[in-house]
Image (cartoon, rainbow, N blue to C red; front, side, top):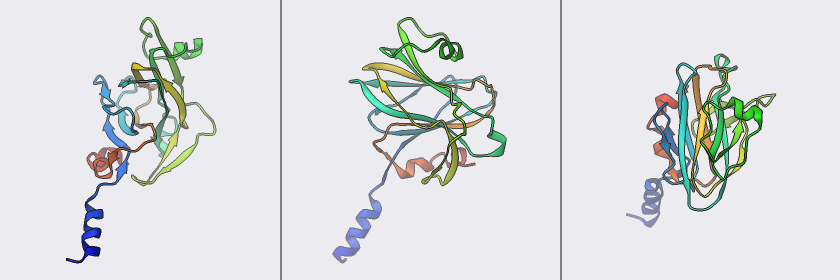
Length: 186
């Protein structure tokens, strides 16, 4: 076997890096096992009443972008899920943000709230899944040292699919993204 053929074979067998994928279920907390890498996690509001929770635990204060996105489809034009970073050491939300949260904040918790109401609504093309999405735009937030949570809910109570992007440094494998392809694709 030639060295060139061996090198091509090794490169083809080496998995590429991508966002770590995940599928969110209402009532079942999702855990970012490696909070230093990026994630693209997906879920679906069936009734619009659901709340999704992602648990994060950082060894030090950690800055990361977070955004929520929705498939760019006519029937989802009014679907605007919101998200919030909640935890001890997070700043206090405004009265409007506090009123919009899907549940009361635990004692000693603060919140950074993104209600996803920017207009005009930005669109982006996701090159791995090869789809267009509406996005809330990435918002850089500082996660506190220790445990915190990301809450996802839909203030307008609309059903529909959504995704949440977190972080920058890729650490997942490209092939993992296709495990739930039928759910992610639209």
